[in-house]
Image 1: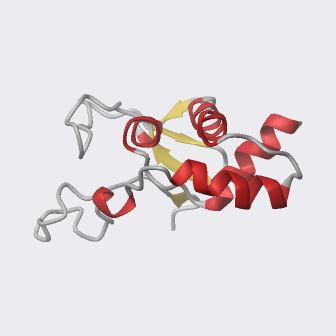
Image 2: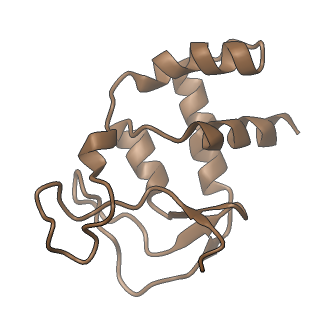
Length: 128
C-alpha cells in the first residue's frame, strides 16, 4: 500500500484508454486559464484574511512543490502531455503527497487546477 497521496499524474492522452495509465485523469480536464485569479479571493481572503493576487499564489504553490528533494529517480524524461517538452525524471514528496517532478510545469505553463489542500500546505509553509 502506497503511503502517499498521488497528485499530478496524467494519462498519455484523453483519447487513449488502452495504455497502462488509462486509470489516470486527462490533464486536459484540469486546465483552467484564469483559475488562479478566481481562487485567490475565495481561498486566501477567507483562509488567511490576506489578499494575494492569483499570480502570487500560483508562484507560492510552484515554489512549495519545487522546494522538496527529488526521490524515486527514473531513467529517461517524462514528456509534458500538453506541449511535449521534457518534464523531469523524478518524483517529489512533502511526506503526505507525491507528485512528478514536472507537476509545477503544468501549473506554471498550462494553468492546471491544484487541490485546495496543496494550496493550504504551501501557504502554511510560507507563513512558518
